[in-house]
Amino acid sequence: MHELGIAESILERARQESAQRGGARLIKVGVRIGELSGVDPDALSFGFEALVKDTPLEGLALEIDFRKRVQRCSACWREFTSDTIFSSCPDCGSAATVCISGDELDIAYIELEEPACA
Amino acid sequence: MRVAVEEKVLNENQRLALELRQRFHEHNVFCLNLISAPGSGKTSLLERTLEAMSRDTKVAVLTGDIQTENDARRLARAGFPVKQITTGGTCHLDARMITKALCDWNLDDIGILFIENVGNLVCPSSYDLGEHAKVVLLSVTEGEDKPLKYPGIFHKSELCVINKTDLLPYVSFSLDAARENARKVNPAIEVVEVSCTTRHGIDDWLDWVCRRQLKSVGAAAPAA
Image 1 (tube, helix red, strand yellow):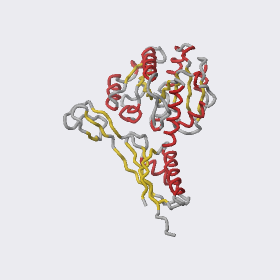
Image 2: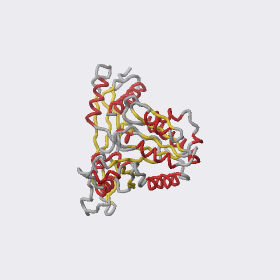
Image 3: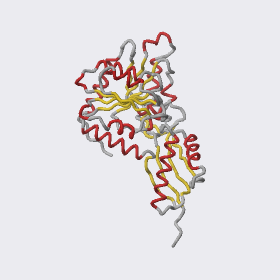
Image 4: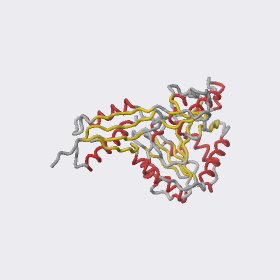
């Protein structure tokens, strides 16, 4: 259960972005979480909500883009995702495939309120 | 207004890990990060390892646990520098803890640094500690399907050590299935089988450490 620490890191980055933009109100943070990242999306959402509750950031949304592991076939170069960990190529059946992504743990974007025109 | 950020969530950890990696490179420190479930035998493997190492190898160990100094006491008997990192609840080690633990050690006095992570197969896999390689341990009293249940760490490890092979006659654990499962998740993973009780296979493990260390020496400086 390290998702609370991860949620705090995300919040820290969001606060920093807001501070750099004159304290603009934060609306949403978008993150990408890969299947192999070791982070559970539900636990992350739960931790994030718990951290913003009863703070000025209450209501700040967290959008999680969950990414499946992508395998590439070493024989025919087909890239594919699979529900099971056993990942033979669906095209040519080769078992020689390598994992090319799926461990994302990224902040994609931060959404803030437009600053009011002076 | 949407601002594209495109950064790692653990950017700060990544920055500190890179700093550690650069320091290890400068001072010729070879660093391994040992990860397993609680009770798979990380400390026992390190005990056997330290016993087998000559003084000139300049080995040091950082060992992480939520509480107690027990592991550090066990490992200190071999006479090499050992430091316990007590996380006080945190389920993994992060790069900041490593930086802090190393602050009063002279890296020139260290040739091989073993980091024994907190017993946990999930969270430690997210935190780069600046190591050259991650090593995952699995023992035969666990399920041979662990690589399938916890693919993240098997995917990121260069070596899988299967421990407690002396217990194979008493448990329904198939070494072949375990090896196959580890390779399903990570076709490049190497596997060694050991018993820390009988010392069977310990030389295979030490050989791997030696070979991997040689590979790291003379490698290019780590880049961001």
